[in-house]
Image (cartoon, rainbow, N blue to C red; front, top):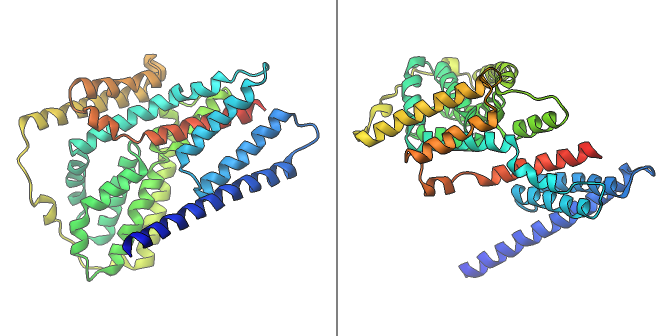
Length: 344
């Protein structure tokens, strides 16, 4: 009976995805017909259809987001390859765009921090400094999440932070309001913090790539100067809203003895790996921030963690396989779609 129910559930899910896929095609065709003009060429109509079709697939999730990106590149190569007026190969070259290398360097750093537990060390070092006031604790956790999200995936940062403070939730059984505030504040902080740097979120990289194609290159430092202050402002506003919503000013003080429990003695090799990660992180960030002055392109600087962390043995082949390669596919597809829209 259980297998039958599972099979029926899978069929229902597949039918739903098929319906969403067919709906996306019809939706894209209708919008293309409504938006098209008599002056549009055949290629322009194809690109317009692809734009609406991709957006609909991303929204309905009829197929995985990275699959949409592969579809975009394949579709563009197919329709552009038939015309001698267009170079279809440039859409394949988005897979090796400088933005892709920037993201890949960030992924290597994030995986190394997670493997060496530097992220947990940061939490242990910072959180007690915010005292025991629930309002300040919430701000501290949101601030740490936002900062880490600037160099890590938003999803990975949220999962890691919630897992790290899970012992705290067991102590908050009688403080439902604070638990709700934490569960809302941490994901929000990860999303907002991702605005702070180019590698903090995939849409940032796509926007930078599109602007660079238009002749408006943005450096890592220039993005931070605008994105980071805005991110911290939005973070502060959201924190104040949570305090007001859940009346955290009237909550009793907290204690963080769980942060020092079950500490395991670190081996000399683990200490060495932590030191290597910190050194490579510092060098990479320095090169990213000063790329315009030292003359090293941001994409080239991204090779520092890729080569350094694997050469020193901090990251092994199995660690590299765990990287979110689907996100790179998503970014490459977005860059290809932006390039096609710009040309047409």
